[in-house]
Length: 420
Image (cartoon, rainbow, N blue to C red):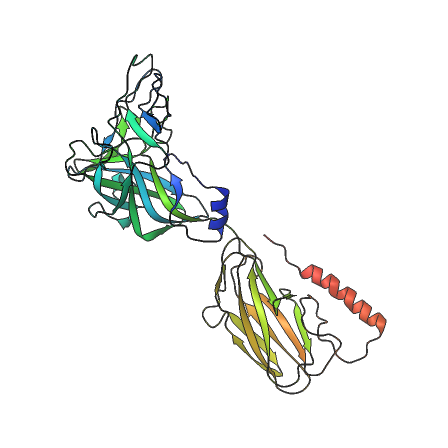
């Protein structure tokens, strides 16, 4: 399996937010084109490149293309790896094919079957995760828009002096729908496919192998071919080969969610801290909150539907939580919830709020709400990590107020949790 992952920075940033981009190429299993000029010095027609049989200055590859005809019971297979921490959503599969002597305007195949499993076909132990080798799933066939390629013989000046390549093997790119989309977590997987030659054509269909000048086969090549009912290694002579193919879809890159809670969308709440509000009166009032996710992976509120916000330790009040708008918050996203709070009698009241989530170091996110139906010296909001948030009209002297403020600052700093 020859990995050549093609992710631009823009794509990576988008995918970290779990946005699905169904038409994006997320994987390529190696190159096919060897350039616009052969080793023997022949230039390709304008707008085209060659895929020239490779040599290692001692031997030449002998197979121009490998059969995968459904009618003849032949198929090809190769593997790919989803890296640790990533999740791939595959929406289509593309491969190269040609029919020797076909007109440039005629597609080599009119049908393709695709199967994706979690083990090499030759082992007979894999689980089929998508498709089969009988159902036509072909979506489109077209000469590849990123380069028109002619497959040709080797023209090295030493091994094949004076060789002039023919332009009778135009490679097309066939795309097969993966519908419904297949979601894969980390692991090794195998694609297997076969095709049906277009009516009226006589040769093929053929699939050219991964090709690099001066390399008979890439390191780690392990493609397989089904012949006579048996899967075996795909080789050129004794050299293992690879099949160039592409996977299209989206990738969710590894990242971490990061929870933050704000009162009225502006005042930060400290995990493990205290929120204070005075002068509430004894009538029911509403406290509004925003949950932000400043991380690079979805933040999940894991309490379950209707139990994302858990109220406890009720003292002189009743509290009814209104569930968050969403229990899954995308990276850089937010959701809101509210609490209906009713003091039971005049005076102080309190309760705790807890939010179970998948933040690595703030689960659960919890704090204490201290209230007073009468006015006090504190005011609303909060976010300090101290336990002096329940301010009253007791008339503390100035030195006591200063001491409490300094103590609160130190305790808040100790409570601030480190970030991953």
